[in-house]
Length: 341
Ligand code: AMP
Ligand code: MG
Image (tube, rainbow, N blue to C red; front, side, top):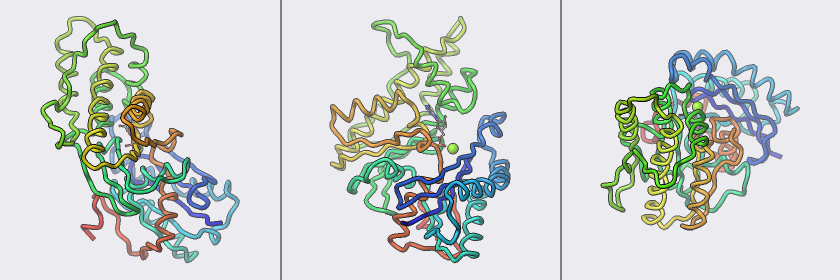
């Protein structure tokens, strides 16, 4: 049996996990800093680093206790090295170095975005590569061609706001709490669309042909703002939330179809915080049946959020490939870390 430790501290979740054989979660703890950052309606890097520092050791202790194992039984320590907030990444990195130094356990450095995709390995046998990796989160709206562990090629990216960011900004103008995703989702689900009613927001990037695959959500945010300005009555929050989601998700589906067309890859793995959205999940599922493509997304919502289990899961495969790093490894805010070290 191979026990691995996963450490995640790239943004606003502190998380530790112990995973067996790369696919079985023995213990997982996630401490979300949402409440700490919510007065600022966004993640404040300095506060995030301090909050990680305060929590990380106690999460580790609880996980070790729950797993009923000793440090010496760990075969590897997987830690998120990039991308993320550097001050936050450093907290996880330092913990990894300490345990590694004291117990002589190898460290593997994990790409946070890749870990979001491989987390499906905790719920399914991993499909054969290549995959289309669709990342929709607070910091990303992108599609990767995922060819093998550590081998990701960016196919499509956002020009401006990520999808999660759009949810968060639109929720702010609607007077909903932070982070906006779950609140907009709730409002949208309550909306009873009158038959024949038109979407008040324009189709996004409709000028793009089949070759051009990209995301851009700042236009939708502006459309919501203009719509609000045009009103003389209190804003219909449920209606705006409904059509915001419809418009935003239509672009996701269109881009996935284009990516399949362009690459002929029919395995699609969607992940990241926005995949917690039930409407998005069912839209993608319906598309996968008609398009068709093999769709995976994390079934458990905790695996959509940043978590240590996804880090330990990817870490297992890197450990098998002996992709160890020395104690002097660096962390980085960049996605293509290999290009900067
Ligand atoms: P992450 O960057 O992966 O930590 O995900 C956080 C982002 O996901 C934030 O922008 C949230 O607003 C968004 N998010 C979380 N839950 C939902 C949801 N149910 N629907 C849409 N977006 C969500
Ligand atoms: Mg987060």
